[in-house]
Image (cartoon, rainbow, N blue to C red; front, side):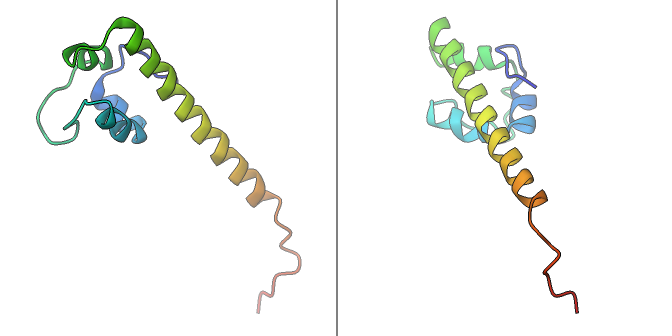
Length: 91
């Protein structure tokens, strides 16, 4: 799944938990505080004064972070599958 500017904030933080910290650092705070700020990522960014170019940069960065996390997880999975278990003591 790719992050787009029209993703709902609620879906963003549910599907991409790392995004909560990323957005907090960018000045978009209190995403899970219970306050219903729900709207789109674009809405939240514009409310904080981000330009369209800055919003596009945020989306690119979020997708890059997500891709890096996915690549790292896949590498870990491949490493786990390749471990030789024939010499493990199973007694």
